[in-house]
Structure formats: structure tokens, C-alpha cells
Length: 327
Image 1 (cartoon, rainbow, N blue to C red):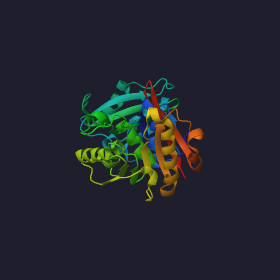
Image 2 (image 1 turned 120 degrees about the horizontal axis):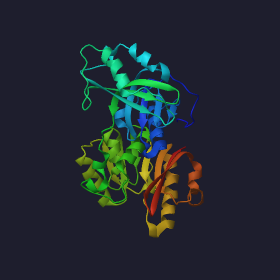
Image 3 (image 1 turned 30 degrees about the vertical axis):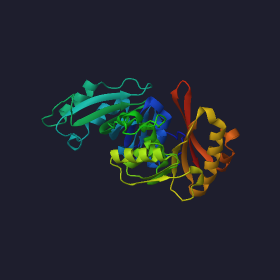
Image 4 (image 1 turned 90 degrees about the horizontal axis):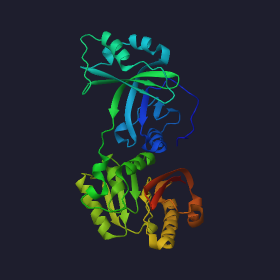
């Protein structure tokens, strides 16, 4: 697993990931987990790595750029002028500049566009729908001339609980559920409290074989309707008590059920579930109310190693804590 500790600077990275500031910690961890990456540099919300991950799966990354050239800021215009743009230009282009808060004196878009224009035979500028999107990205000391290779246009909001054929009001936000699928980074997983199938949908959409259990037959029916609605075929649904599971699985992702009026009963179920889960997997992502005192109410958690925690504000009366645990 990646260690979220910033290593010493390096500048041979080939890709820059523009992470969402919505939850920067989660954005970073999602990319590092999916790509199984340990060495990186983070400048603001710009992640520099020398690996292209399966970016079509990503939830909290906004754009990805391939680095064409790099240099200290005062030398970048010369570097750009030396590039063979035939390898990086197609039909039309535009120039955009991005920079971290620490960056100063970055050349303007017009300056860079002028250099690119002179290096292309019969160039065409298209500011609205260019075939080639070129970016000059500046950090505190370095400038990177890049080509955009991906922009996240996934419509997670279209899959929110109330827009599915069958809803469950406490279902995880689809974008968050997708990030958890990427962090688990397994080809198959189980959601033993699957509800109406929100987590299963996001796993199925990226090709995972998903299995869902629920003790309520109505929820199993709702999950099946939703999974079929989104064209997901690799799934198993069973009417089953999550505290009795015994089949080995690659991993588990689940949003633990929560009822305000039955906290003690919830804690008992959580603890029983953690005990049996230890026997069937060694990697799990669990979401639960943030006000749960893990050490006090979940003694079985001591058998697991908590690798990472995230807290998500939902509304004024509820925040969720999500933990990645391994055994």
C-alpha cells in the first residue's frame, strides 16, 4: 500500500494528475492505491508520477496530462521552442496555464501560443473545441509543458440514490463509492450490507465481479433492479445475514447500517461482523457514523490494522467515517 509521505522531490515524472480539491487526501490516496504507487510528488493539487493508471476508473481526479518537456521556469520557453510539435499536435490547438499558489512569473498563454504557432506548419487555433489541449503547468521552481490526455466527464450525480429505479435514502454518494472501489483495488468484492446496491453499481461499472448480501428481501430485489438498470451482469445477490458469512472473498466494501434509536444493537452487529470478516478476507473498507468510538464499541477492530481513515460530512446531524483496514 502507498505510504502518504511526501518523498524527496523528483522531476522525471511523465504524468501530472490534477486532483479534486473537494477532498484532496482522498483524491491522492485513490490514485496511489489504484496505481500501486509509492513514489510521487504533490504540489498543491497537482500530483506528479511516472505511471499512467487506469484513469477511466478515477472519481476524484479532474484531468491528466502527459509531460512533453520540463525545466526551471526561466528556461521553459526555450525548451518549448526545441520540441518537435508534429508529435504532439493534431488538427488544432489551444494553450492553457495552470499554476500552484507558490508559482510566480509563469509565461503567459499568449507567449506559449506564439512559440507553438511558429513550430507548426499551417497551425489552427481553436479555443472552444481544440483537438490538442496544451498546458503550461507551474510549481514553485519548475514548469511543465504538457498535453491533456484525459478529462473526467463521468456523470456520478446521475446515479445518485433518488435517480435510480429503486432508492435507499442512506446510500453512499456514487462518486465516493467509486473511490472506495479504486482504493480497494480488487477484481471482485463483497458488500455484505448491500441495501439498494449503490456500491455494487460502481464496482460493476468498472468491471468488478460484485457480490451483495442483505438480510432484507426487499433490498435484494431493489439491488437487482438497479444493477440490471445500469447493465451490470457480473453480480451475485443473496439473502444473507452479514454476521454469518463464511465464503472467502478478495475484499469487502460496505456502508454499515445505522439507526439512531438502536446504537447499542448497531455496535453489537458491527462487532460480530468484524469477527467473521476476519475469517473471509484480509482487506476491507468500512463506512460508519463518525461518532462511533471505535476502541470502546468495536473491540474486534483490534484484530485489524487501520491503514487509512477519511471523514465525510453528510449533513448537520451526521458525518461518516470510512476506514481502510487490513489483516
